[in-house]
Length: 178
Image (cartoon, rainbow, N blue to C red; front, side, top):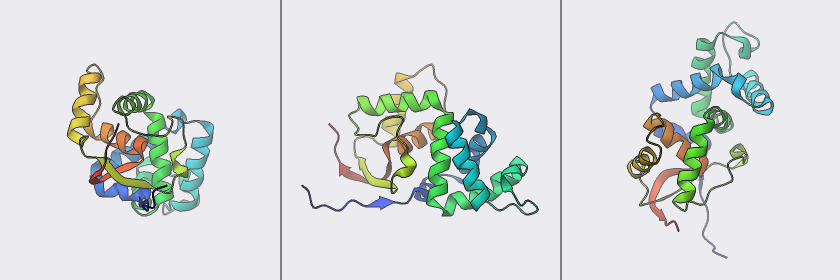
């Protein structure tokens, strides 16, 4: 067995790779599409919103108007790894087609990733090793060539890659695939 220590980055470290406008967009997608979530995910998300997100004037922040809830949730997403993980898990559920496509893309490129239905919120965070040959640009190009008829933003593809792989592109020389 290799004695090498594995370093995890907390889930809210994703904020270092997200523009504020995109973070807002992700939260808006999740909080306005909770009906698309499984009962368990919706319950877990609403529980965390009630517990963590404080909206002035509302005892129960989960019933606050969407724009106020999003604004308050942004701060929690930036600081709380559990909340960030829950939001990303819900986001991936909402984008079911993209999730399947990115999963297939990564598997075809020999990435070692958890099964599609795994609850990634149970992980301690993101790994920092990233296959050096698979930069964001390379992966975006491969995705757009493979799924030419599927319209999606590069940011969505990148976020799904990060979430499904459980990796942040911190150490681009740290790992080989295959």
